[in-house]
Length: 93
Image 1 (cartoon, helix red, strand yellow):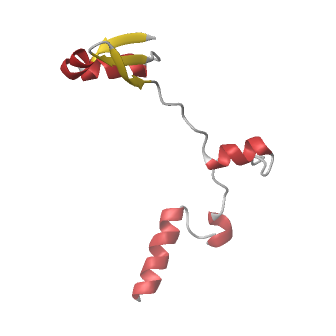
Image 2: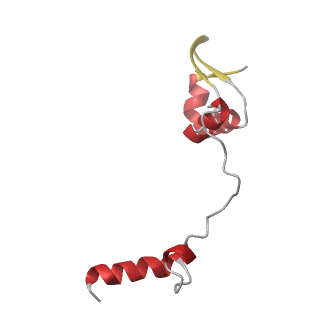
Image 3: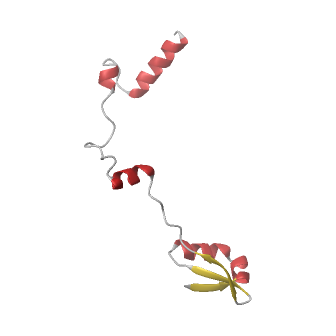
């Protein structure tokens, strides 16, 4: 673990943060006594990943967006057209 003084941290905080981002742990001292430790933040898995890991849910068999436009409105070509048509209908156009 690297050690730096509080004065160095105050003078070059971005340099210390860059070293932590690169994976280093830094112990900050004030007059030779440890006052804080800077360690890289571990990313926590998202809710979906936790559910997948626990087996409570399963991943979809296919990836990407399902083809819902032909089912909703066969005469329209895109979801944007469906949305615009719905807005026009709501506004009485």
